[in-house]
Image (cartoon, rainbow, N blue to C red; front, side, top):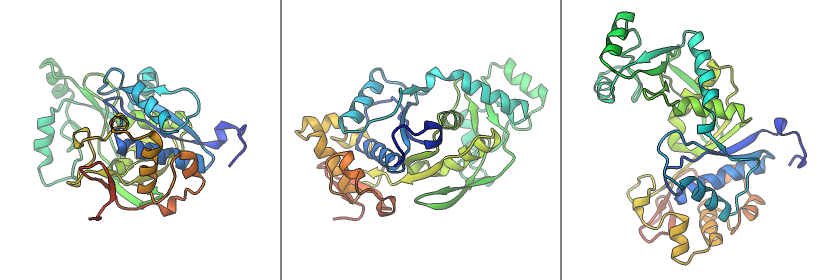
Amino acid sequence: MPPADADHLTRGAGRYAPSPSGDLHLGNLRTALLAWLFARSTGRRFLLRIDDLDRVRPGAAERQLADLNAIGLDWDGPVVRQSERLPHYDAAIERLAAAGLTYECFCTRREIQQAATAPHGPMGAYPGICRTLSAEARARRRAEGRPAALRLRAVAADFEITDELHGRYRGPVDDVVLRRGDGTPAYNLTVVVDDAEQGIDQVVRGDDLLPSTPRQAYLASLLGLPSPHYAHVPLVLNENGQRLAKRDGAVTLADRLALGNTPEQVVAVLAESLGYAASTPSQLLEHFDPARLPKEPWIMTADGLLQPSGCP
């Protein structure tokens, strides 16, 4: 690793950026642990950011930080909150607008869903309903009181990224929302701006987000920002093969502590799910090798035990 006093601008950084919509479950903690391991094993700083522009539950962010600390994760510098960075997103949107790369969108979710069922464009992509609206049509929709979101006017159909676990991955690019109709900057924009401005050059997150990554890397290229190195890791799933959620039982750290587990025991279970025997992140770091990571999701059974996908 680089010396502790190495210039932080040359060291780069990894990060974990939860949304404070509730307590972290074991799948979230596993991903946070992996993000910490990837960063620390490569001599990077490890940063925490609270993505609090969507649904925020009072006290959730504080509990999330306490849980991360309880399982032994540390981070560098102060915790950044997106709600404190609105001028940065506005500036990025202004740059895109000045380049002619934005347009107003008046579509409702229902209109988009109905249009998306037509046999054109990639699955889940915005079908471009408002892309060619005339000035008169836009004025008419405003007069009707329709709120206008702001979308990117994409000039590419797809974009390729390289992922440490998935290799080269090419995915569709569409006219993503940059600012929602209520004026809130959208996730695909904020994550790109924040990662670049914080010096984050390594992003480790769940592989359910892999399909959206080409959109974000493409947006970064339009803004002249660097794309980070990506590693999309397998999720923890419930017995039905669905992404783990609070409804699946004792899935949060508080739940496990109430059942008599210690934080070290929880870490040991998470480490075992990654193919290691360790009870602290520091112990796990001593032997961590991304090449050894399992490629399949882990299943949390009804009794709260984690088992590899496909195990009886």
